[in-house]
Amino acid sequence: MAGILFGCLLFGPFAESFGRKRAAQIPVVVMLIFTVTTGLCPNFFLYMASQFILGLGYGGYRLNGVILATEWIGVSKRSWGACITQLFGAVGQCLLAGMIYFIRDWRLAQLITAAPLAVVAIYIWFIPESARWLLDRGRTEEAKQLITKVAAINKRTVPESLLEKIVEKKTVRKGGIIILMQSSVLRKYFLTIILAWFSLNVTYYSLSFNVGNLGLDIFLTQLIFGLTELPAHILCIWLLEALGRKVSLMSTLLIGGFLCFLILAVPQDNAVAMTTLATSGRFFINWAGSICNVYVQELFPTSFRQTASGLGSIASRVGGLLAPLLNMLAVYHWSIPTVVFSSLTLVSGALGFLLPETRRKELPDSTDEAEGNTNKTTLKSQSETKKFAQTISTKL
Image 1 (tube, helix red, strand yellow):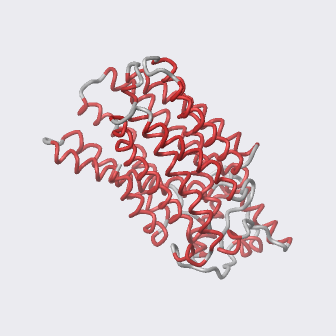
Image 2 (image 1 turned 45 degrees about the vertical axis):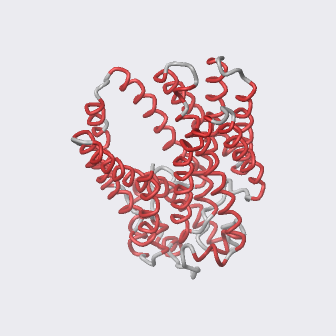
């Protein structure tokens, strides 16, 4: 978990300077190498060091992979990028529970998990760089080539006049984290989404790390946790488009926090009821996690988007690191952890009203657009340009 935190901290700013593509490729290679070395470690200290570096790679890849996908996907399908990523995470959790049940040799299981990573490590070198990032860095010719390539893949042609409008460079304020110091509006958005991300991860990991105390078989409970995540991420795609980002985030956090609070009303020896409530609460918390992954991409301008996502991921990992410490408070009274993480989730859900709605809006490219939460243009030609750009990027 500490490795993931530092991975987000390292590869967030790295991606702003060197590109989304490179910041996703390097972590994948790191993950592959240290997934193998972890399974071969001769002692505990080398194992811990290898796990830390593995987490470093995972943090960088998880962060930049979602950003790269989001910046290529059109408005109508943007929520798919983060939600499908989360969905495959749930599939992996289910498969892991089954694999560990049948393969009790942890070294062998560790080496087996390197196989799919090898495929990703090869494939990722063929994906394109983000055209938005290229434009933001002034590399317009490269962006034009990529847009033309995407249009060809979708069996479309790009009129030269329209292409010139697509790559027109706007003068925007740079500065990364300095943007938060300059804009009170973006600072409010940032602190609200950070609190939500922190709270839901404290809850998620507190429930996950407490799986052995719920009363059922740990392999079965882990499988149930993974299976319940699948519909959460699938439904998230529909909910984001039907209700919007703001209502979706508030409702999932509030319902998830309330269900976790209900655990306090159940006798500790009732394993089925405890597991049912924990699983139900975790279901909505997972749902909220997918929404946060989409929301954070749409709230901030291109020059700060990667940094905001990185800081959000760091907040989530801090929540994960604090979760086992929070669970240790159960030695004083079993209800303390549940009261704390449920309250955090409810508070962050209530504060969601401070966020704007971003459904079906273009990603902001400048601070002014992000502050006004609009990327609409008044010129007809600019509107047509963005519509065309959305169309050709939808299927990539």
